[in-house]
Image (tube, rainbow, N blue to C red; front, side):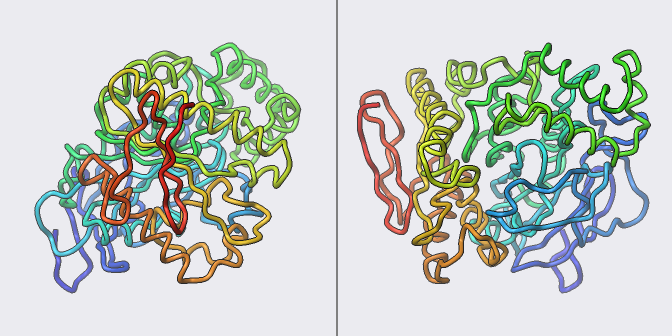
Length: 447
């Protein structure tokens, strides 16, 4: 890779990329990891990317996957990006100067399989890459009905993530990343995707460590029967029969999104926080019960961090017993079960609970609140209501605890570091949980 004052360049399998410099790192945006899933390729598994002639400009993020508004904008603030079905791109940040191969951290965004983008400023990886001397990757994947309806196959959004990881395996050395030291971190739907990839056979072996943040594992994958029913509803809203499913490839994307919203509205009383289009238990990509499947195999021995926030459902149901019940059933209890299974099968995980929130916040330590501190860019979240009232020094202090923890796992396979030197793994009879706040503490007890 060129490290002169000129824009950085790398050669990957498909051609030459010209990036830019951002916060002390070389950055490459909007890099295709798959062929465009448009036209006849809509609703089909991703194919390898196409080569390009000459030098491809990689100085700005690619379009987000087609989607509607975020249901958490009242907590996170609102961000918009250009949208397109031609969305299968990723972004790479690598420190300078060049050196020996560095560990790689791939981050999968959340959004309930319905919204989000790895190109959002929220997920900028420059600070994390520079601080940890690691290579950071963020990626897009298909969302909503385009990524998780069930026609001939399901789980297209997860298959996109797997294709992105294959691209990382084949190309990350060009960015001085080590393809043999890949950590995948994800939040919410991104974390559930990691659990799904570990549960099936299609995505195994593509990463070596995992960080699961706020995994809604109480939301089990749909059976193929349920998934077919949801897709039939989508067809019906569009005036199509099941035997006319092929016509979906020609429906304008705006009409598809409108139909997706109508299916969501019709099923809202039954589904609650669960989206109508999500993971499908197809055995090859996703197991019927990922927690039991992955936990029962000890996650194949890979080091794992598991965590939730104290008040996950504060983002959906601020205050009250309902929010506490959702936090427990959808997030905390399934992850404790996962930790127990891993420990029983010889691969204990490190378990945390993120407790910090601004004083007096109506959302508490809610879903997504740890994200600014993982990527190390609280400034990108300056207008997020969930951070309202927090002073700059506090934001820096929390970042200085969280970032080194994620970096330590990526670099060493163990999350302990100078500021948190004694975080024991979760073992039967000694249920150790790290409570992350301005003063981190480890609590041990019998679950």
